[in-house]
Length: 167
Image (cartoon, rainbow, N blue to C red; front, side):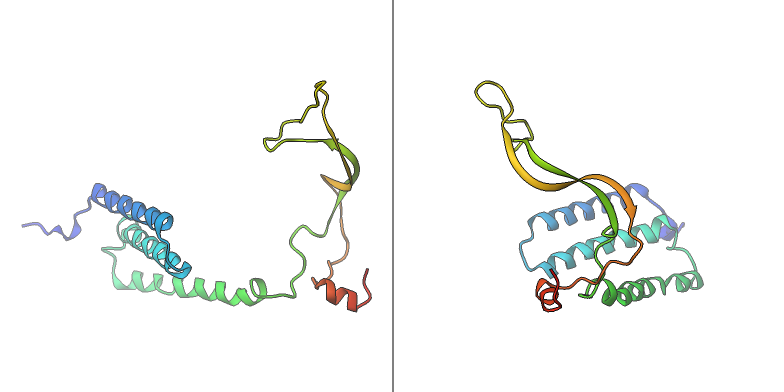
């Protein structure tokens, strides 16, 4: 009698993956509890799907303990990398300005422009002429002219800037 231990049924695994995905989507759309529980449920369903893929499609179900042991440190190492960087990225109020803030872009002065409706269409007057709106400001053309040769100053609040005698 053959053992069912090594039997692989892709249709059955696909069915479970489909079910878990449907439950995950329903959980994300209709759950109205606390945010931590919403994310906890989404991560739980992601774990179930990842476990099926890891076990069956990566053929880990029938591998020995040595190979499984080599895979074990991956999750804690990824967590260490993420959490070790959080103080420097997510929780640092003394960060430099966002990426790209050191780029100098071409600016043009705009005196007036054609008024647009909420769909982006020109607004026309009774004679069919475009309605112009006064606008006194500089607008970026999106063209990068140069890269600044200095590091952007640290981000500080307006009050701190005023206290330092800034403009």
